[in-house]
Amino acid sequence: MPAMVGLAPLVRISWAIVPLATIAQGFPACHAAGERQVVQLPAGAALLAPPDLYVAADGSDTHSGRVPERPLRTLGAAAARAGAGTTVHVGPGTYHEKLVTRSGGSPGRPLEFVGQGAVVDGSRLPGPPERDQNVGVVELRHPHVRFAGFTVRNAGNTGIVLGADHLTVEDCEVAYTRRHAISTDTGHQVAAGGRIIRHVALRANRIHDAVLAGNGYGQAISLIADEFEIAGNELYANRDIAIDVWLGARHGAVRDNHIHDNAGQTAIYVDGAEFVRIHGNRIHHNKHGIGVSSEDGRYATRHVWIHDNLVYDNAGHACFIWDRDVGAQDVLFAHNTLVRNGLAFRFAGRDNTARVISNLAAASGAPPESAGSGTAATFAGNVWLAAPVGFEDAERGDFRLTASSPAIDRGAPVTHPADDLGRRIDLSRDHAGRDRTADGRPDAGALER
Ligand SMILES: [Ca+2]
Image (tube, rainbow, N blue to C red):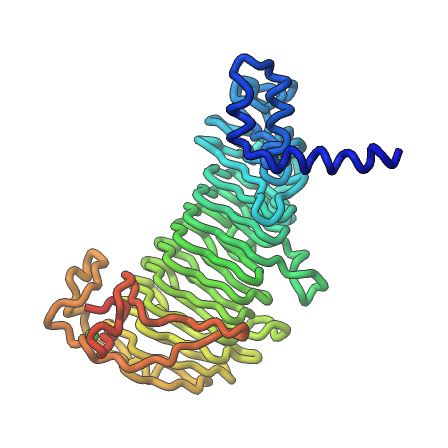
C-alpha cells in the first residue's frame, strides 16, 4: 500500500497551507457538523488537545464527562480519562475519595485539576491512619500536573503526596491531616536510592491543622525537590514544623509566606539543603522563626540565604543555626527585622559559617554578636535595639521605619550571592519590593524607608 502511505502526508500538507479564516469563510454555517469537523482537522490544536472534563457532585461516571451537562461523579473517573492538555473542572461539593493521577501532562500542556468549591475528604478512606506518610488523599504521581482550587482535608496520613517532576499545587486549602499536609514521597530521597523530583511549585495555599498525630509524624510542608518555589502560602495551627526543606533539596525559594500561630515548632526549617533562598516572609507567634541545621550528614547544608523577613513575637529564637554534625556553611542572615522574640539569633554546634549583616533586632537580652559558639560568623551593619522603637506600629506588625528610627542608613553593603548554576541572588529590593539602593545607603532591617 505504498500509494496510500504517501497520500496521507500530502493531504495534511494541502490542508495545512490553507489559512483557517479562508476555510471558515468558504463553508456557510448551514453545513452539517460532520463536514465542519473535517475542515477543522488541519487546524492541529483542536485535534491534539483532548476536550476538558467535568466532574460534579450530582454527576455520574456513566456520563462522558466531556460537557458540563454530562459530568462525571468521581475524580478517579476523570483521572482515568484525562491526558496532556486536559483541564478537569470539579464543581462544588464533597468528594469522599482518593485521587491518584493515572497520567500526566507534557511540557507546555499540563494536565490540570481545577476545583471550584470542591472538597476532597479522606475521612472515609480505608487503611490504617498514621502508618504510611506516602499515602495521600491526593497523590500526584505523574509529571506536568497542576492541582488548584481544592480543599483537601481529613487525611489519615498525608494530604497531598508529591511523586513526580513539574508539579504545581496552588490556591488549595489543606487541613486536618494526621501527618503532613503536603509532602514529597520518601522514595525520592537520594540517599535512600531515589531520584529527586524537580520543578515543584507550592503557591498561595492555606495550610492549617496539619500533623495532628503530633511531633515526629511530619511537617505541614515537607519538601525534597530540586528547583522549587514555596510562595505566598499561609500556614497556621500546625503541630510541627510549618515548612521543612530538607534531605537533599536544592535550588529553591521560600518566599512571601505568612506563617503564624504554629505554637509548637519552627516556622521555616532548612536541614540538609543547599542554594535555598528564604525571603519576604512574615513569621510570628510560632515557637521559633527560621532555623538551619544538618541533622543527616549525608546531605550538605550550605548556601542558605535568609533575607528581608519580618520575624516577631516568636517565643524562642527568631533565627538559629543548630548543628551537631557536619555543620551549615555559608548561611546569610541579611536585612531581617526581628522584634520581640525570645532571642534574635542563636548559633550552636560546630563547623558552621555565617554572615549576619544589616539586620534590625529589637529585644531584651544579649546582642547578636554573642549569639553562641561553634559558628564562625561575621557581623556588619546590624542595629540592636533594647526596645521596639522607630517603627510605624510595632504592636500591629507594621515595621516600616519612622523618620527617627536609628536603623536608617545604618546597614552595611551585602555581597550578592550566586548559586552553582551562576544565577545571582538579587538583594537590592526590600521586603516590600522597594529599591534598597535608591539613596545609596541601605537601612538596617527588612524595610527601607
Ligand atoms: Ca537608606
